[in-house]
Amino acid sequence: MSLFLRYILAFIIVVGIAINFTVYFSVKMLCQPELLFEQVPSISDRKFKKAFHKLNELGESLYFSHEAFFLFHGIIFGPPLLCASWINPQEKTRMLVYLGSGMRNVDFVTKYSDISSLTTASTSDALLLPYPPSYHVQAFTGIGVHAQYYRHQEARQLIEKTLTVNPIHQNQDVVIEASVALRKQAHHIMGLPYWYLRGIYWFIRKNNIVNRKIIV
Image (cartoon, rainbow, N blue to C red; front, side, top):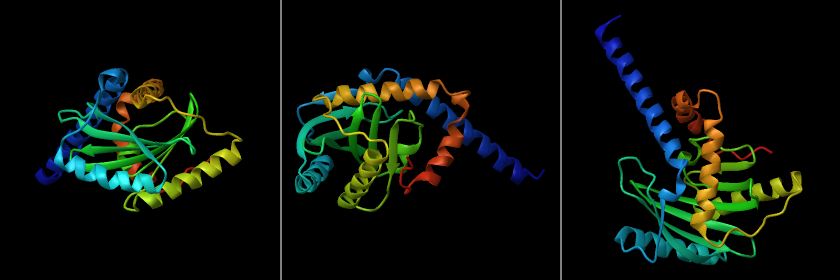
């Protein structure tokens, strides 16, 4: 084997180990979600304020009302994500934004029971870790918030017609709601055989399932 190929092989092994370590540590963090969230009265960051005002206008055009600001301390070796949530009581759906580490992610979330929900995200990172089977998650990149919400509504119609379910009102405290969901996800992952070795597979898989509609 040439020296060049040895370097390539060593690089691949190191990257694989790093990804698996990151996934393992992330899942362990999700087991204690109450330590990851911090609800705050406001966020003064300039970039966040600019993004918030734009998203607030978009949200209002879709009949969402702002409800809370919070920080997410789940980024390994990085600052917390700056977050905000909106809710549409009539549609029983939340809109959430996470800003930081050079990215902005918007999620739409509709809940059907304590163990069933639909999430439509705007980044493939939302698909990295597996979810319990009744947690329906899809992600579409580069399509805009209105188009993303339309995809969410499409998926809602499919779920509600196929499974004969209706959305329910979500917990008024978004941090509690998110904490419960993350803990259930962590327990599901840790119940999978050799889950701590699957990080590299999940990392590759997420790019193969992004921009695909859910299948029920």
